[in-house]
Length: 449
Image 1 (cartoon, rainbow, N blue to C red):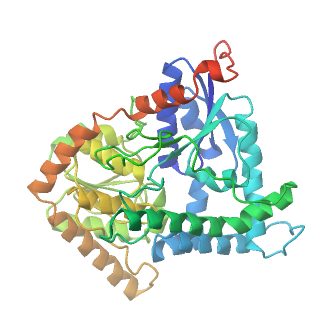
Image 2 (cartoon, one colour):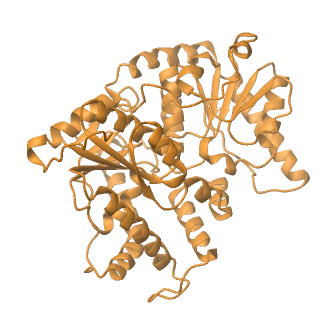
Image 3 (cartoon, rainbow, N blue to C red):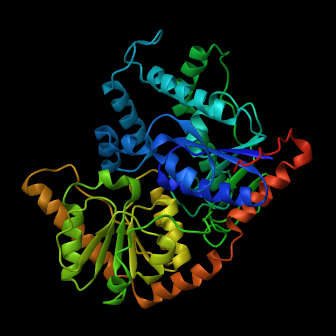
């Protein structure tokens, strides 16, 4: 079969799709990956066919309005307001209806541009797999080919636990199920203006949002992290994280550095480094070195001037994290799942919508202390310096709470996580949902991926 994978978002959103693409190709399927242009080289380096999508995750997360929203608090409502403010600032053509400053109209126009690229990317596929960045577009209209969803966090209604972002109260299964229904209605309320505008601009009839509750859905969480709820339907699978067989390119500081001292603290905020105020990484590094730690900062600012701390642009987490003492990160799924597989404790500073959920799960499993808020990141002058030192103190104290018991729990959990089916389980599910005899399969062209 020919699979089209649609990966909207950051490098962390793309990497699982590269793993899925490699596994599908190994099973004999033809695979294309649609993602932003700044990741085209990564797709081609994985031996997969690249299909272009407009935009850039790096540029999106660097917008001042988005940075301000994430520094304030990582919630859907705050991020949505940041997106609206960014859209209002941007130069754009005057809308045909709804007014020049109508944020729903602006969002709809941007969504339709992306959707045209997506429709072209999946046009020759038998099956498509879409990440969570496609939810709004799919609520407007389904794809023309069969498709599944892939998500980093569980959203299917269940009595086992509350919806992401809802209060965790000991009120039983009925309460948990109600939180999922409330979350779904809130999401519908948030999406409806832009979906209605998109349908109007595309000449489609108005109507209710296209539901995704019956779509085949793959959750990339490990059953050791989220025990599969017994009330989830058959079209929902919990596969475990999707990891590639070989790690990404890395400018690791080298074997001599790793072996010349104790296990270092690794700090990485992935694509969200713009949210961390300038100078804070150096302040944290100095505080940790003063507390007796070696430090490796991955990505972000390269001006780490502290003896005992190193900086590198990229790191193969699969190879490096087993040699670390603690990973300090933002709570992103990809980074966090790498820490789980490595058996290294985590200190989490939640920055995005799903990060508090990950932080809570890691603390519940006993492999991380309580999450650290970013704090007063909007200040300037002397107050900014005080905020940076306070944040560094919080990080240092959190690392001090990582004891041998937490390290042992992380090692035991790693053994369970590494036994997940992972990407192979995902391929099994896709082949079971769409046997080659049930779709109009197209043989891969000679020499194609």
